[in-house]
Structure formats: structure tokens, C-alpha cells
Length: 358
Ligand code: PMT
Image (cartoon, rainbow, N blue to C red; front, side, top):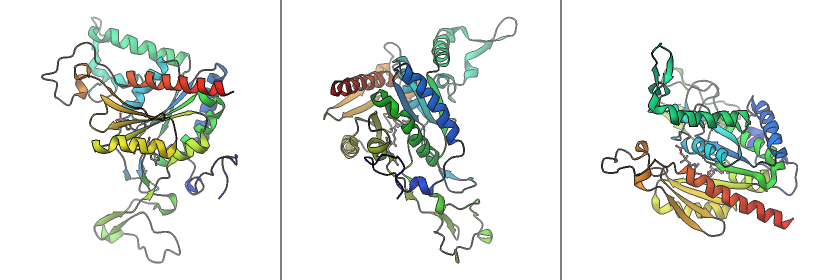
């Protein structure tokens, strides 16, 4: 196997990057990231790479069908805003068309920006007076990030694009050493169709047009094919990139991963297991149904603690319609406004520890 990271202390990348194609716009994205990182490294500013949204798994090369997941990118987009507020520069590696920092306040289907607009006396379009103050605050934070060039938006769609980008960005972040932070909130596919088993054209559902799979001259069996009227999909595992990130791509940065579960009895166990297996800094566990108001911090020092937003401070839109008997006591709290300062605090401790070693 070819050693790709050029450092014999690090384990080589798996065959993945030799057998799955480099995305056509990767070089352009990495160039943008390089100059962004250089600017902030010169200013000795911390840089957080926030990943956000779900990755897709295409079933065909000329993709008509793909497998996707539930993630809307709320965790990532919201966290990115709080990292910016905490003084970080943020590379926002996100699923194309998922929620973005700042515009997320007005882009959701239940939060359409048009619902905040009206006409004034002379027919010009303006923001409704009751929303003016909040929108002015969001706008001013958004403009500050733009003026100071502290937010870089990089999109992906497929799991392949995500993996190439993550690896490429990690390499660029190396000069930041401990000032770099990886905050892995994206929902990344565990299974995929490798390039060598992907069919070129749309899979035909009609039996009259199905591909004849005999005589493929040694070519590997396609991962998705029709058997009569049934579509059969046989996926490969996606390599566990967290291991590669910790051991090879970004050994000096702080790495925070998220662990998603649906069975409450597994969450703490699996978060701890991930931390022990990958030996990174922090796992933040969350349950699919309660992720917007409670998370479990599992740290490398053995600590485990829940962060919970009390029912009376959750936003109306996240209480699943059970708000009738819950009255907000004060403004709603986004849990990321508590998560990010805690992560930043642990990052400070890690930086200080690193400095004291030198
Ligand atoms: O976007 P939202 O709707 O707000 O939802 C937020 C979220 C629930 C997606 C987010 O908070 C979250 O939990 N993200 C991680 C989801 C996930 O991939 O969990 P997992 O348990 O399947 O994987 C655990 C970790 O393994 C992940 O942090 C990932 O970095 C890593 N992993 C995953 C796949 C893979 N092939 N290799 C990996 O190393």
C-alpha cells in the first residue's frame, strides 16, 4: 500500500483514496481553505472545522438514486455561530443546501424569510417591526464574520466528497497544531457503494431492460442490481475515518466527535467505547429524539456529565407539540450555546497542557 501522508510515524491511509475518485472541485476547495487557515494562523487565532449535515451514498455513477439520512445540519450550523462568538475562525464543512450559520434563522420551511417581511407605506419591502431587533442582531453578527473573513463555507454532498475533503482539510490544518479543533457533527454514512462496484446508468426497474450480469469478465458484482422486481443493495463499510484523523491526519489538534444513538441504554457505553477506541479528546453523545435539549459529555479524563436545557427554556419548535402545559420562563436557549463554551474551555486546557510540555 502506498504511504500517502508522507510521515512514516503515521499509519498509511486505507486503499480508499486509491480506489475512490477525487472530487473534481477538491483542489479549488483546498486552495480556499489554505489561504483561510494561513490568515488565521498568522493572527494566532484558533480555527474550528465544524462538519454538518448528512452524507449521501449514490447508487449510480450518473446518480438518479441515493441513500441519505435525517440530519438537517442544525447542530453544526448553530454551533458554528457560537464558535465564531467565542473568537474562533470556522471552516464550515456542510452538506450542500443544509442549514447554514446565520441564514438558518430564516431558511427553514417553518421559518421562511418571507414570513418576516411586509410592505411599508410606500410599497417598499421591509422587515416586520416585531422582528427588527432580532434580525438586526443576526445581520450584524453575519456581517462581522464576512468583514473579518472568519467563516469559510465548504459544501459536500456524497460520503466520498466528505472523506476527501476532511482528509485534505486536516492536512492543511496541521500548521495550527493545538490551535486546530475538529468538531464532527455531520451524520456520516457507515456503508457505501465503492467506485469499482457502482453501475454507470440508472438502474432499470423494468425487467425488460435489466442489465445482464453474466459474462462481466472479472468485473466486481455491482452493489445495486435488480433481481426480478426486487432491488438488491449490498454495501461496503466506510472506513472509520476517526481513527485516521486521530492517528495520522491531525494528531496535534483537539478532536471532538458526536455519537448518535436511538436506544438510551447504549448511549453512554458506546460514547465511552468510541473514546477508548480512537483515543481522541471528547465524545458528545446524543439521542435522536432529545438531541436538541440534552447531550452527554464523555471526556478522556473519565468524566461523564449531562448538559440539559430545562423544559421551560426550550424553543417552541423543539418541544414536539407538548408545549401546552410548559410556559417559557425567559428566552429560549439553544443547547449549542452551552456546548460550545464547554468545548472551548477544554480546548484551552489542551492548548495550555501542550505549551507546558514545550
Ligand atoms: O444535524 P442535526 O439534525 O442537528 O443532527 C445532529 C446530529 C444528531 C447528526 C449530530 O449531533 C450527531 O450526532 N452527529 C454524529 C452522527 C454520527 O455519525 O454518529 P455515529 O454514532 O454514526 O458515528 C459516531 C462518530 O463516528 C461520528 O462522529 C463520526 O465522526 C465517526 N464516523 C462515522 C462514520 C464513519 N464511517 N467513520 C467515522 O469515524
